[in-house]
Amino acid sequence: MKRHPALVPLSHDHHHGLVQAKRLRASAHGGDARAAARAFLRFFSDETVEHFREEEEQLFPLVAESDEAREPLVRVLLEHQRLHALAGRLAAQVEAGAPASELMAELGELLEQHIRYEERQLFPLIERLSPDLEPPVARDPAGPRAP
Ligand SMILES: [Fe+2]
Image 1 (tube, rainbow, N blue to C red):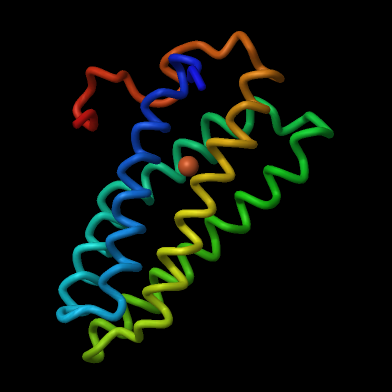
Image 2 (tube, helix red, strand yellow; image 1 turned 90 degrees about the vertical axis):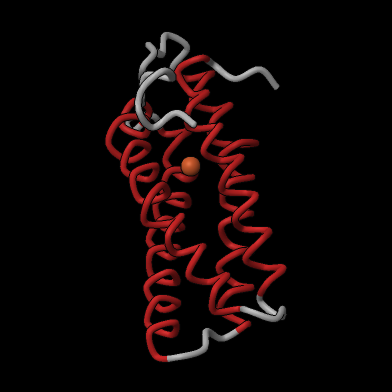
């Protein structure tokens, strides 16, 4: 599906997030789970935290008054909180020694289905409810955070 230009940087982040989520799940039962968990946590703090902030502060408010958007927004906001909570638990486990494979798998799974929900349900809804999105809703694609 063709993304509105204003949402392209966020969708680009989603692609990175899917790669990282799959990697985390795959390493949950692999050889060096601790290194994999560390790499994921670096990605989470370097990119995901800011990504959530952009969605919450710039994008979601555009449709916050819409009844139709209420349920999807509640869902994704709660998922953002759960992802923060799971990442915090994983960081504590890494500090303490070995991260639990169940937690790594759960975090990877939640991030993956969260991203798929935003891409398949929420972003199309926002595009429909708010067709006059002005780039940059988030970043300038040529800005410093672009890959
Ligand atoms: Fe997102």
